[in-house]
Amino acid sequence: MNSANITRQTHSRGFGVTVAMIAVALACVYYFSGKTEPYPDAEGLGLPSADEWFAGLPLLGFLLSLAANGVTVVIMLLFNKVFNVFRSMTSLFIAFYAVMQLATPDLLTQFYTGTMLSVVAPLCMLLLFSCYRQPEATRRIFLISFLLSAFTSTQYCYAFYFPAFLLGCGQMAVFNRRTMCAALMGALTPWILFIGFGVIDPSGLHSPGMSFIFSEIDVEGAMLFALSLVVTTVLLLLSYTLNVIRTIAYNARARAVNGVFTVVSLVTLLAMCVDYRNIISYVPMLNFCAAIELTHYFSTHRANKSYVVILSILAVYLLIYICQTVI
Image (cartoon, one colour):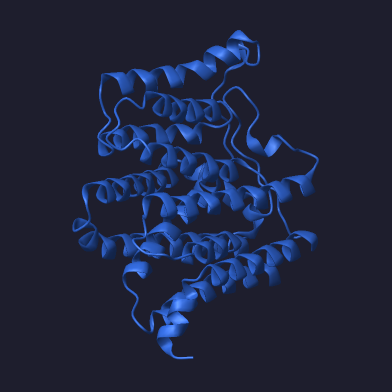
């Protein structure tokens, strides 16, 4: 098999699914070997944070985490099938996202806020993309705002994405008075319902308590965790920079879609810097954004030997996982 055929295979659905299944198998090895360290979320503003939803049922949390990651991958598939964000047929994002998640196995093998955020935010993006040049699509804007506000009651990290989606409304050419009213009503409605039905007691609202992840893990674990974040961040920024020039030549809709991805990526990086004590909540979203940008780059730069770089990236994340398993 020549270089061009190998490169073509790395973009195939079979390759992506195979890598994902290997990642799932390695996650099972990690979890059932008893290595998973549960990390506490920041406390919810009014409702319990996601890590408390299945407290005492770690196996269920593990299975739901795998299921949620699967949902995120399906949303990525819809991105390309419906909006052609990668400009070609490729499933490379499945492999990238799977190994990036695997590089932080403690987070992959438990259900927590970051798991839910990586489902809710991409789902909101999918809804937003469907609103392009449809200012009358206020119901979808309402739903986006409703989802973010409802989940903000469980942890404040969702609130960081409100500005991103408001900017996204401008990029989708739907920013007007009606959509802003819809967004405002969507943000208020969950709290009215929660308080009105007695789900949340107004007197019980409190500022979130935060724990610092690096105080919960040993030095070696902290270094490997930080290494995975640094590698992912560098790949995200590098691939975005290399994609910019090509993106300029796209049509208006494609540029708008890529603009939303850019804003969400920047908000995620900014949130990780500002809210560093709660950094674990943003790790899956960082991996999501990096997988999208990397796949976009390799789908539009299919050099015959690009498979070497692709496989090298996958190998780096696999090595990080192995180091954590051995330690």
